[in-house]
Length: 486
Ligand code: SIN
Image (tube, rainbow, N blue to C red; front, side, top):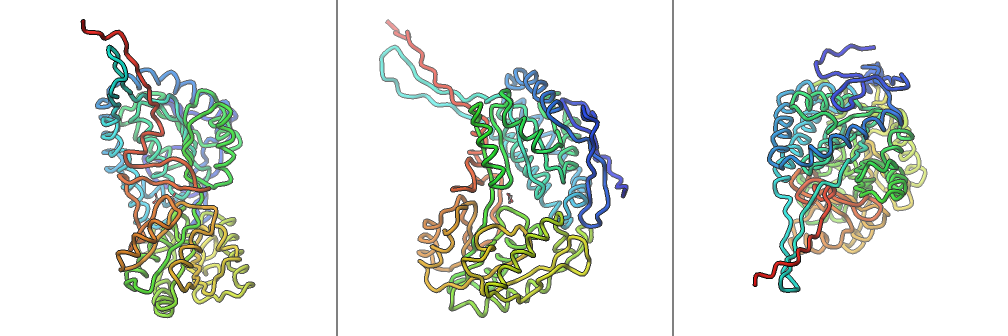
């Protein structure tokens, strides 16, 4: 076991203000993907722990919901300040359990904190409406109210920010939340809970239960106390959760797989395009739902793009995320490495060529070389499913219509990108892409004030922005009669 000294390192379940072992006594080792060493042995919860947390959340609900949005915002604001003043400790924990470069970890903490701040303020703007009446003596209006107890199931690729963008709006709306963090990365979630205690967040408003999806996740998705569940992760698990949630007709917000395309048109600025593809493809070693998975490059710019892009990828530094000059850390586990290897082997067997990287990195473990393949085509596995790793697959296309058709040729629809300097094309292509987010001339678009979410099998609902809080609010229509004045 490696010991990391950090005041925010907790290893018990967090249930309603208490740090406690799991009912079963089970614990799970949390591994540092950079070294394979155990960082901590964390309590591993099950159904009983989850039910306990839900009961405590239900007890906390009335008082939390009754506070004004301004009062709730004060708790959230204190939490936000504490997160930012502990950014170094939080980033160290995040990199240790997840592997991403420390500067990306710091960026994630800052990004996550912004959701807490944004929604603290947005809670104050959860406006209802006055509806012009249809009858004299009657007035019609709507108010928005918290849905009740909520749950979040969050992924390992953003162990902090994906929690913040669920719990921020839930708490701002007046809803307690029980969180199941990914089993690989529960330490960031527990550290956040530790700071929530310091911020004075009342007991029961927040609980964190690391544990298996088959127990904690299932309980959250089926328990009738939970009125809304928000999930970020694979489409396969999202579909199962949606079906489970149907049993008690919960609200669901699902942010699922992506298979994002990037189109580089002939008229693009080459440097902007290369920078944008690098930023999108290699963020978190290719392990985000919005990483470019299919890079479509038009004929006229193809050769120039390939040569500049290969040079940029070859200049990347692979290493332990804690080293300041690391551009790409290790992958999360062996399964992730196996998927990248499978996509490369499948592509090569169908005619693609590896132009950079192509195999496991000399550092060993789960380190993988940043890789480029050219000559990718639609029947390859890499075209059909997300690699979720540092493999850039480049496809070639001729016309705008062909590029859009190929980009849309997937059951997924989370994020798409394209590069062009033609304003008319920017509108045409932007409107033609079947995605929840379309980024033009940039490889990074994430911002707490903008709606994030997918169409097709990439999910339902939106996170961030004024829309994000709606997932945790019910609309109540009030019809008030008997208001005749004479
Ligand atoms: C994700 O991979 O789902 C999150 C990416 C982001 O919010 O930028």
